[in-house]
Length: 249
Image (cartoon, rainbow, N blue to C red; front, side, top):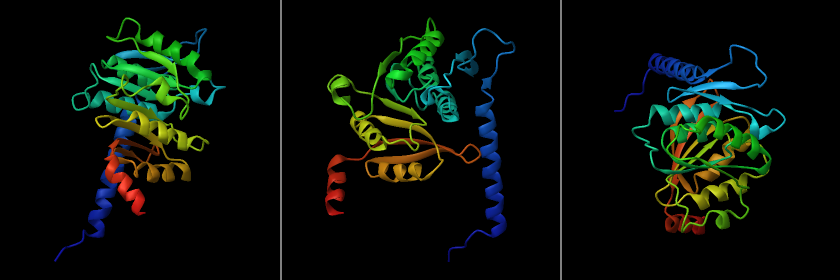
């Protein structure tokens, strides 16, 4: 007969999980530092790949502020560089924002295409150029991408095959979640892996994950309740079997 764990055992495991979460969250957040002196330009500093990265934010643009999900994804990429080797791999970042994930992936040897909306590209290009020049094997490409609009024309599958899709905090209560889903679906080919960090705030995040799992296999890599962030790995489901399930539903 199967024996259920005692309440004391369950409580002990909960405490261990909480302690592990707090320790990992502390390690991730410790990678950020602030300048010791006030200068003419406001920036925040980060340490990845043993290098100082200076990020300029633009507080008047929501997409040009660095959110903790980007730090979680960057920490994972560096800590697991052997298993998830980005060297010489084709990588695209969706909603790159201030560019931290693009910068770290480039420092780890990836050929990165960094994408976002037109109004944040200037700040994104500035941060990427400032922190990758002379440091990376491949110069990152910063380019416009509006989810759901002309994606196939801008990134035809015949010539644009990505090994990894990176995304940090692209899911929240905005009106373009369906377009984001379609963009994930188009860019993710049979051998593509998605690494996606998400902060859970309201119901749109939960419902998006549920719909996402209809198209993709999903594996949780990090669960950080203290930051309300989870990190996922995803890969496409077989289209034929998926179409059969949808037809039967």
